[in-house]
Image 1 (cartoon, rainbow, N blue to C red):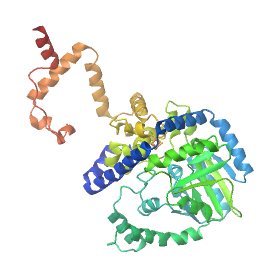
Image 2: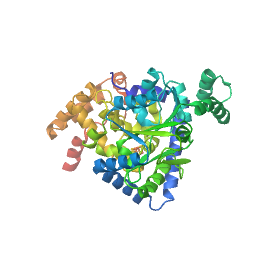
Image 3: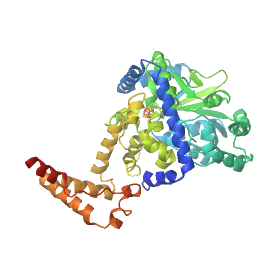
Image 4: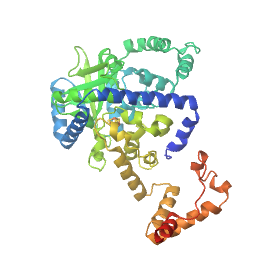
Length: 456
Ligand code: SF4
């Protein structure tokens, strides 16, 4: 598979001014709301530290918590399945559906199912999946992956949605009023909600103590999928576990405030057993998580998928999630995706300015900037870096080897600045010059100036 070139894809989004401006504004508003709501809670920083510790504790005792979780789920009448990888996950889900004669499914939002490529897998086998989340359904109709883990269609303008609905659902292309667009989608989806043979959702938290799965949404889409059809299948990564019911409130308080700056998600549903007359399954998925747990990047498993790191990231806000061309995008994506396929995602860790803002807002303190450095090191060591980066790094290593080399490099650089033609210095070879004018070069290097002035 070819490498994802986030810089190129991001540049296309940057060039599209109306979309870029709207995207940047919406995400920055979410970030500012997050700051305001967090500032109203005096113990906010203690909450973040505690959440990080609970996650680290759970991850370091994951085997015993997973066994306890399974025991409780089974005792509560939920069928438990274990999937080692994406293929196993999809096969298990398909087998459940095949044995029940399922043809249509409504599905709440789930990054894990996107990660596994489940929708495509099931659709190739004759099972139609209807996304129940509005943003996800918009993206599904447009044949695009989600561009944000909480706001899947945030890169679109209202006019884009109006045109898409007109094309796919026969609505009026000239009306981009959100109420109208919502009503079009409601009418379109109602029959699918009522007639679906099965429902699916992801899981935000699994409580080991009680065998409860907790799903948080703002539209109730997971609840419709879980409650209306006679069969409900949920999928959960092994890292979603927390030990006790009493730990849950902390994560619920952090999740919505970090994600959108709201005090709480509209729907926080707890599923402990199937409702009367319903069959319920939970697929617990590894898909590389155990390997990640044993690696230096293990703290990525603390992530609760709130999207706060995306809302604050200056690169993400200007380039949009689609430019990462990956299931996970933005700051968490650039440190997660290389562990799925190092070659394909080797350029992503370079899409970072090292401002450190992601780490400052992350409710569970995932050390993203630190991992960016680690990935860049690993990428170079494994020969997956770009030729240009390698050349620059080799040249820098030579220049920085000792002060004599550095002094020669400084003089050479100054000579080049003073003597090379402007057409070359400000050509496409120097992207910096696209938006800047080179400053007037000095007569001497700083080293020469320092020597001259301190001798006097
Ligand atoms: S890394 Fe932190 S801020 Fe980013 S999505 Fe995960 S929990 Fe949220």
